[in-house]
Amino acid sequence: MDLTRVDEIIAKHHGEASSLIQILLEIQSENSWLPKEVMERISQELQVPLTRVHHISTFYKAFSLVPKGRHEVHICMGTACHVRGATRVLDAVQDLTGIKPGETDLELKFSLETVNCLGCCALGPVLEIDGKTYGKMTPVETKNVLQSYE
Image 1 (spheres, helix red, strand yellow):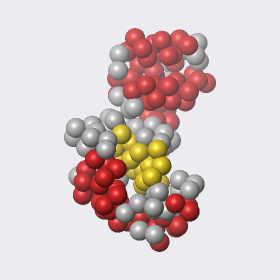
Image 2: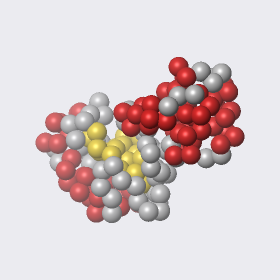
Image 3: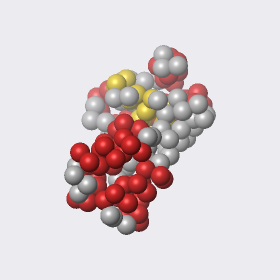
Image 4: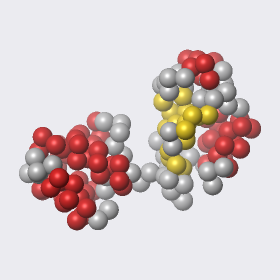
């Protein structure tokens, strides 16, 4: 990410240390991850210790310190989805992408995460890609959906 863009985001918040989380969120939103040099710049400009910036960015799940794929895949592992076969859907995604939860493929196409609930239990098992929900998934349907994102 261009550090001048980081400076613009910091300036938008008047360089206030109290805006640290909001600044990190905006950068994460634009860049999909928080590179080390970006966190160092934030620390320097806000006059906040780098350890605090790092602590915040690792505490909240919204932040990533590694590059994310173009498509974020979430698989619900909540009770309703689990009993309806969420593990088979997860296995299918892992087999097709070659990644495990918390990882991103080498082409930066997919990032995979499991979640406790997506709030649509009647549709279980549920797969979500880039915010679009796919319900009543099977391994075969999972393959078809993932192929449509390639």
